[in-house]
Image (tube, rainbow over all chains, first blue to last red; front, side):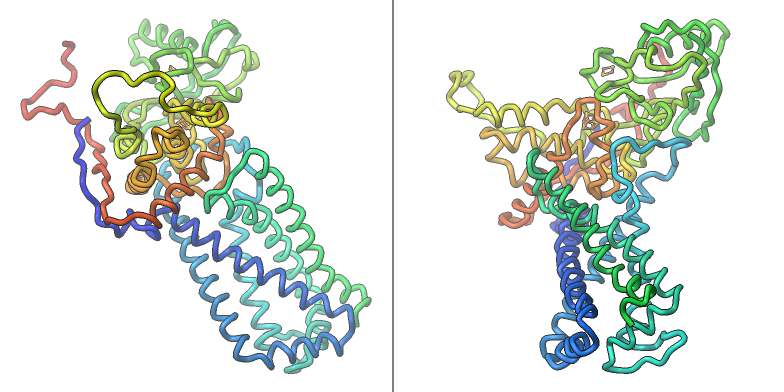
Length: 229
Length: 275
Ligand code: SF4
Ligand code: FES
């Protein structure tokens, strides 16, 4: 085998970020931060079932701790950006790594969720942008007026529009799919896999994903059914 | 048994290649997949056509030479089986088998079902070894290795380097192979010494080759004829993170990928000469 050994500078592909493994570590860490947000956000949202006063007070509370709100938002934005950058780079690499496609290819072992991460991710991103424009900025608020500070009204009015709710439920289901793979995969990326514990982790990931989906979609469904009005 | 083999034919690396249908009428169910191709090749040779080129050596599932896709599955439908060990009784009479080489830019096509897997050699060369002192053979049992550790090392060492993991991976990643080669050394006391450098160098080599990145999908273990577990990838990741953290110098050694075949000589040698 005629080859030449070279010393690579510790940059480019030999660096931590340059390696595919390093990118996955970054995705695991940022993914876990975003997961914590998903949990916190759900806990906040579910207060809608305790009536307008409680939810609006929670909204005011978040805005009143401005010095804390912005650092959290900045961490979240950086996490999203890093998570996406790594994804895009891995996706480009994937495209380059198999230029000639198989005429036939069967999946035999992998989960549907794991194979559709490149799809569920971007759709959830598009949803998050829509969601922020609707409920944080108030730019998109079909068929009703956005009232700054009246979170309860905004939520009920927003979800009363059927397609907003459908889009929300659809995206949350994809988020669940994304988490079902991501929640155990992040442990694998940082080097934890154990023949006894990983199956438990995978089971837990599925259960947590289902609970999160149920928690979130209970809100538009309750609005549509008139339970919350 | 009658089968239709739809085989990828490609004259050389530059050729475009296409599928050609070959009906094979006298398939013995006890034959292996490779023997079935042998039978086909004999008829092709009799007809004066070019036989189908495929790689093989041991034909007992231990050398890692053979391998191609059958109906979209690496090494065919049986788990933990290489194509040389795959018997034809697992197929139905009259079935059509789509036979395709591994497809990955890190495995450039050579001819028909043969691809160039030297990228794997380079990954091993960049760190898949332990340095031992020369001299007399060491006394037995000077280094004690527990049964559990020995089993883990042995499970990872079962990798035969066939390339099915890359072929099956939607990312065309070599993580399972590299993980196996790292894990079978790094869990042992003998491999502990070079553990950090090994992980850094082998991972760097893997990433310099044109493989994709592992996204923990897990198709590789399903295709692997030696059932190498995904755990080895986590071991690679752990060693890589640990090594990157502890590393004190900036030295990473990789080997420049070579995609051309070289005769190793400046003389003009006819590659078709028989001796
Ligand atoms: S890990 Fe399995 S599939 Fe991959 S090269 Fe080794 S034996 Fe083949
Ligand atoms: S020919 Fe050796 S493994 Fe198949």
